[in-house]
Length: 178
Image (cartoon, rainbow, N blue to C red; front, side, top):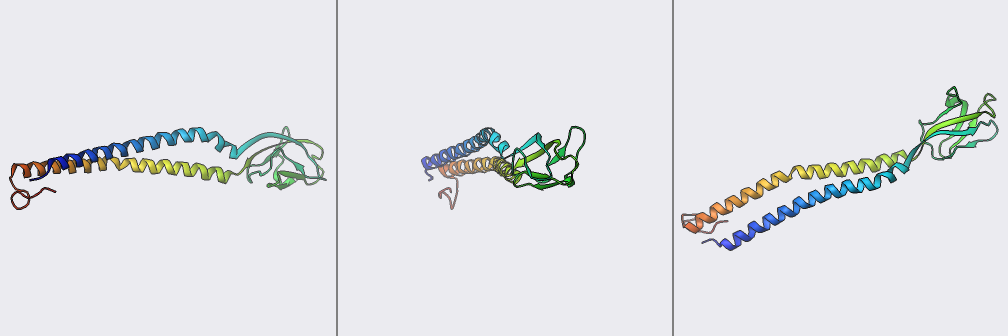
């Protein structure tokens, strides 16, 4: 005869385990979202856009922009009416300096738009956050399958346990179930 007390204990452990897994998935998702909300302003500081950084053009000494570590491909230098084109300047992106080539615009007030900081690090941090959310989402998609497996196990345990208690078989006419 099967011990119904141990079968009930196994079912309780399965229910509790399932509840714990469900709570972990819920807390992981909500805490991850809250953490991202708190960290997002710091992510924005890794790389920022600068608009209308004013400087006086010089063809004798490099002028330092307001920020160094300018992201290549984002720099635009212009005066109040025209984009001057980067070919008119020698640019050191790491130091954030520009040196005018030629005499046109020398001493003139110019403006620069650019992104400074490390865009690669910002994108990598955002990518890792998205990856962790995707992993949580994938894990949560398997939760219904786990629930189904637990329910099937419990139903089989109850059916086989009831059959063994009734003395109608099992293994060799009255053997232990599971």
